[in-house]
Image 1 (cartoon, rainbow, N blue to C red):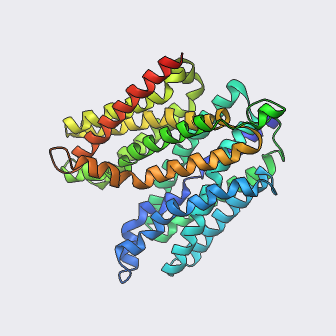
Image 2: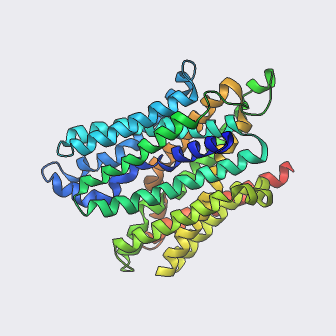
Length: 384
């Protein structure tokens, strides 16, 4: 295996296990049953807390990069993630420790989320960078599907067996330790001198705004899809899981083709991502059927396939040199805030529309997405 291929494989491995913190989602019922005295909300902290504690991990990378290399930080984050999974398996009967380990896992997740786009921008340039970023974004989704499927099977032997999946993190750690070069061969932005150490703050603010909006609208596929399906008597939790897996696979495949798709979407990529998202939501809201649920998840998945690599590549266009880690961390923090406020924001807007259940929420989010798509398309056309 040549040098460049080893580097790509190591980055793809990091991305494949990056969403491992979501693994407890497949065993929520088993966890709640295992701790009947704790209360459901307390038990759910094992699943939800990493979304909050990821923010310190995101913001820590720029400061840590002054003393450690990206390879060292990546290896440290993966080692911490593996340790959290292993300790959770051993001490699965101690809920306070599980919650504490979940918080630490969120910090590790925040670090790897910041580091992998930096690795791609640092080790690759030009068209190859777009291609690698697309595949890396696809591996995020495919890794999530693999973890859900394997974790779901293991949970049948006891909910805590899901933590055996963290053996995959150990494999990614070994790949990063042995195959990531010690220092990037190129610098983000592909420039040298003062221009490489740039920071376009208006562009950064714009990227963060788009990221926040997309995240806030997209995340209702996680919070409201089951309500849409089960609440309307369209199917069971099994159907929700199957459609979620279908969407993740579709997103992963399309994201892996991002390098080619970008040639056609150009500056309209973000607009197209919101268009696909919004169209799927609106159609699902207007016709509440199983087909509507399929259209909803497919539209959201195709939108994510375009949005994720476009966002990650946008960091290098906004900044270079010592400012790139800071920009990456700041934008990803805003995006995570978007995910966090999603159910509250879209729920409040959905309450203003006629109807009940999840359909008005999808309609409100869809209309906002279509409006955002029109705005971004007009802005892109004006800049040209």
